[in-house]
Amino acid sequence: VSMAERWLQARGMTMTRGPIDGAPTDECGVLIAGHDRRPAIWEAHTPPYYQRLLERQGFTKYDDVFAYEFALSRLERDGDLLPPLVHRIAARLHTSTSVSVRSVNDRTWEADVAIAHMLYNTAFRTIPGHTDMSFANFRALAQSLRPFLDRDLMLLAEVDGRPAGFAVALPDLNEALAMLNGEESLWNLIKLHWYRRRIRTICFKLLGVLPEY
Image (cartoon, rainbow, N blue to C red; front, top):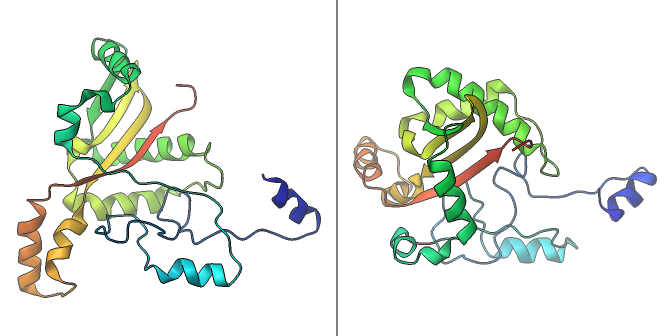
């Protein structure tokens, strides 16, 4: 808790932060740079006037949240984009018998979602302002994404067979939706099915590791 928040709490007042959607791990904030870029899935993408409007009302910036973009071809060409420590750890874990990483499996979908839910709440409790998500809401969210998920982009890490962490990246469905011009029709549903199989962008959304690891 910041000094300002303690001062307010001592006087029976609270500090308002926002805009925020449920938790700091969801879409949050006002876009202040990058308006020329296409909105990515699960990212706040507000018009430029939002910042001016809020600042005229006396609100000030609390924090910065960044999104980074890079091409896979650049990563393959320039290995120095990743710190040497990452390469050393990856090489060591590749030969480890105690650590394993696997994709989410359709046959064990319900069990894997339950594991991811436990990891999500436990790992993200270290983030200030995090609120645990109920299993019902987490399961409903996972189910809503299931039709267009790439199972190879949903990973569970285990240490000696016990869940230790997870990572989720999503095909950027906005890349396909942008081709429909915001119109709902049977023809556009067919187009969406065609375009989503040709998505070239993924969004790395979540990475959670249990505190003991």
